[in-house]
Picture 1 (cartoon, rainbow, N blue to C red):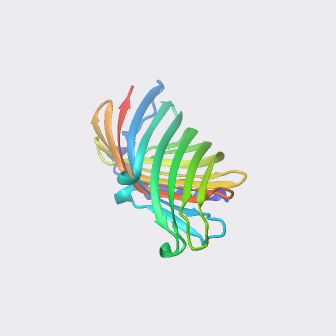
Picture 2 (cartoon, one colour; picture 1 turned 30 degrees about the vertical axis):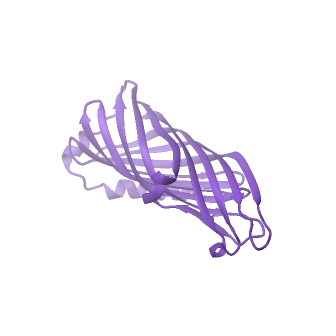
Picture 3 (cartoon, helix red, strand yellow; picture 1 turned 90 degrees about the vertical axis):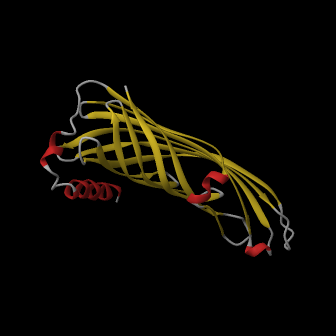
Amino acid sequence: MTANILHRAIFGMAAAFAGLPSYAQSAIAASDQWQFELIPYLWLAGVRSDLKLGPLPGNTVSVSSSSVLSALDFGAMGTLEARKGNWGGLLDVQYVKLGVSNQVAGGLLGGYNVKFEQSIATLAGFYRVLNGPVAVDVLGGARYVYAKTDLDISPSLRGLGGQIEESGGVWNAIVGARAVMPVNDKWSLMGYLDVGEGSSTSSWQAIAGASYQYSPVTSLKFGYRYLSYKRDDALLNKVAMGGLYFGAGFKF
């Protein structure tokens, strides 16, 4: 199933850009020297998660993209990419700490406060399979997700209450593809897709973005990013994050 998804993604990316103008054909060239790019960024991702409360009805913990900054206690995000010729690798790391409050059954069954810490690291190697009007990389690697959840349940009519703390990390093996299309000598478009599988987890990620080359070594990047993962045995067993991102790239 994963192989079929990746095959369709690569074919779709290549087919979508088959009619690019001729100036783009030489705009993306793989260098035989090592090239590095550091990309710090801010991801304004809304968060939605299914929360297990034992005997209480199922609930959803959510933070919208517009209010994520008010719920965010701390966050740090960045990507480091290296390339030589057709080969390369990337490391993407992000850490967020959020605080959310909600009621159960409109307050009839009490409420809860959730403090959520999450670290995600994606390490992958890639190979350029197409280098012409559009550049296409295929990649494979691993994603590590660590989450810590502190749940404070308010007393309710059922007499339930107390605190629950849970933490743990899981690994996913991932495969994916990325396509980059130059629009002119300053602008380019990018599409990315990966899927991951583990023993009791699954995940997938999609990115659609644009880049503006401000100088030979500096670029501005923005777009939309979505990441979803599922942990069968976790308190927050399904987490989905999506929203706009803004960053800057520095080549060296």
